[in-house]
Image 1: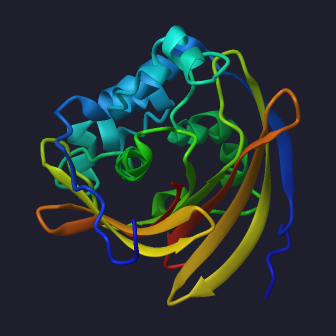
Image 2 (image 1 turned 180 degrees about the vertical axis):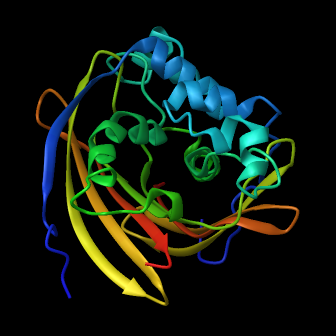
Length: 127
Length: 144
């Protein structure tokens, strides 16, 4: 890979119950993620995705560059913005920013309907 | 003005990594590589046992970061708090059967544009003392 290359686009549509499975797997049972009624009471459109679930999708999209080998993802930093929603397709895209010392640095974004839910993400992957 | 609790560290938190937990987590995030599910496939790739996806780091280190976020001495208003950003730097992979110990430090505190930033650093090591991940957790409190 070289500077300016795009990583393969990664698309996923978290289903209605995804936040419940992620809550169980991660231990984060904050009701804004699993209780639509509570979520609307605090002003959200509905129950929202865990930010760290969305970050995990960014991690998968970047690790795919190295054949999905979990050892190859060396660093990932993200900013959480906006709200990720279940039952809405998430699209992760990335551009190679730098190649150095056997690693690529990839600028990544995750969006839903053009709304950036993760931005300024930077991944370092061994290639 | 520096926060009086800056530099405070929290007691080490120990997490035993179970095979079924790795499978449950991998399934939840949609990781499909057999190295996360099948011990044979994992061993064929050079792992001791099924290996956790990198982002599983937030699961085994949360028990160490949580007490910092909830520390009354820091005075974080949880109702106004957002998880603003996250960085993870990985070293040794984490496999089923590992015991991971994480320590967290209240690393940075600053105010910008009417928001207050509380930054924690977590360092996790396996049973052999090898670092597995280093996390930087930035929580933002709106309106101070």
